[in-house]
Image 1: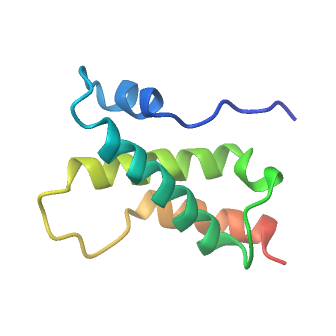
Image 2: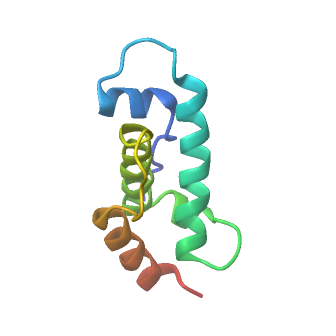
Image 3: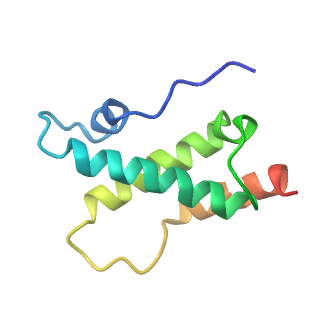
Length: 96
């Protein structure tokens, strides 16, 4: 399996087509929180490399960060369907 690149501020800024650095700290916080959120939803314990190097994990984190960033001014009640679906698929593979 290939090692996937780290999810960085630039990853998210490219996905959202953001120029400038005004929100870098906010985006970095979202990335860290999304990684923890997805890992905790999938496994009971610390995230392992097989999980964090999975394409579905990476996509779930990116979608969640994009969602949080794009909707930060609204009251969000639910996690996006795509993230929930990816988490369910990852649970099937990684749940211990």
